[in-house]
Length: 140
Image (cartoon, rainbow, N blue to C red; front, side, top):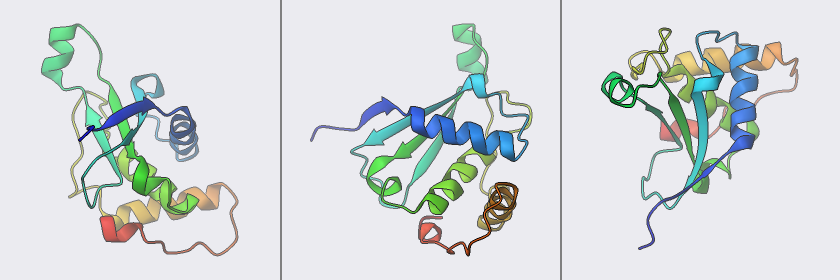
């Protein structure tokens, strides 16, 4: 077995930046957010992950907080653009307002809250066509 392979994902970073700016997620310090695409994960229900550089790592390395949004290519890349946007919003919602290396859990990052933000996002983007409900929910 070859294991998981990772690569920087500039296309995903551009989309994360657009989403954060459009939704005025001002607490998301984009210079401390990184996007990575992975291939080879055996995780059956995961589309993306948010990784945080915890306080202890920040202290030991003498660095500021950082977050990595990982997209699992095998599933994510096959999804519609709107479902991908939902996943990216979901992962950004895990970043707390203090941007300190912590993590918002799924009691806050709920399917309902993600959908509300997604609907607000497409409205701000001026998308007026009917938006599919999507198959991303089976992974939630």
